[in-house]
Image (cartoon, rainbow, N blue to C red):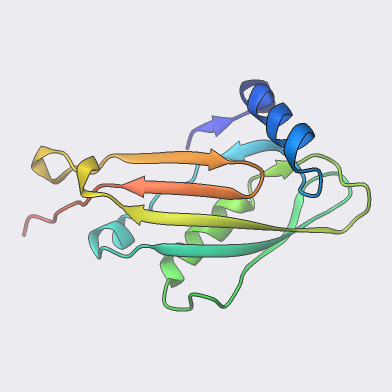
Length: 140
């Protein structure tokens, strides 16, 4: 899994976190999420809203998906597991709760010949992650 560190994200974090939205905490470390292969193959897409509890040193203490989309269990598990690896700036008071949305979308333009799918991830920090993937096919 690719890792993005504070140094790589400093410019965009400084703009987003210090300029526009002071209520949300800025991530210090982000793990790039993946699109679960089974969800991609089954053409499952959707929005997963996570409630993240962050402790005094900026580590993720607890993550849970809101019950908005109970049918997207595989996407919820993937988003929750990914979020557990993030760290954030130290909050002014702890525990601190923040909402982060993961958008899982299928875009057939990202499909390649031979059934291989390309996945692209974009971060609209501090509170949204979009994971786009192409369709993959299974050869029986």
